[in-house]
Image 1: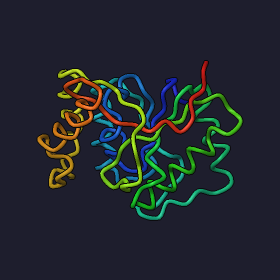
Image 2 (image 1 turned 60 degrees about the vertical axis):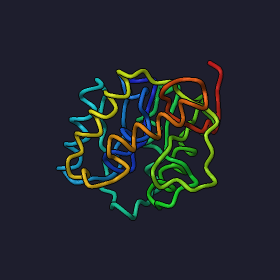
Image 3 (image 1 turned 90 degrees about the vertical axis):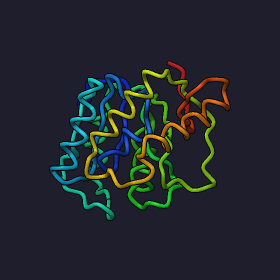
Image 4 (image 1 turned 45 degrees about the horizontal axis):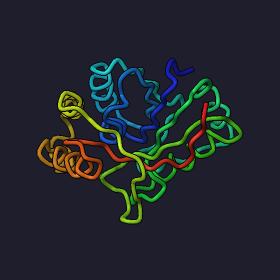
Length: 191
């Protein structure tokens, strides 16, 4: 069971870190795929935020995530006590992101849990944020530090610090802050 009220579903190593700046501190991240090396990078990144990492107990293949009926009982156990779950968007080019997003919708069924989609580099143009989290300069540099832990992904342009800061600055401008992260609230539950 997760030790946090905030749970982030991460289809791959680095998805939670890319999509949830400002929410990683003391969160629980459920990682669904990844080699040992990539999972270790995630563990290193999350350690900087005092976040708990839970690896999905059954092997799922990168690029071919499929959930079985018994997985729904597992996710109910892992998310017991959660107040907020973050997933990648349903409107996403990557099939694993879509599968995990739909799985997240199932995880909140008949439970008082807020569901929030985080932004991914592969989101569709139809995805639109309706919520923003202002980020301090310190939080931005913590975010960049967490992303830097993913050394195997250092060639990805969307992880380049200038590109990351530019995106956060654009979102921040929309709400009158220097930096912000963008989200889409799918369901809000007042607790």
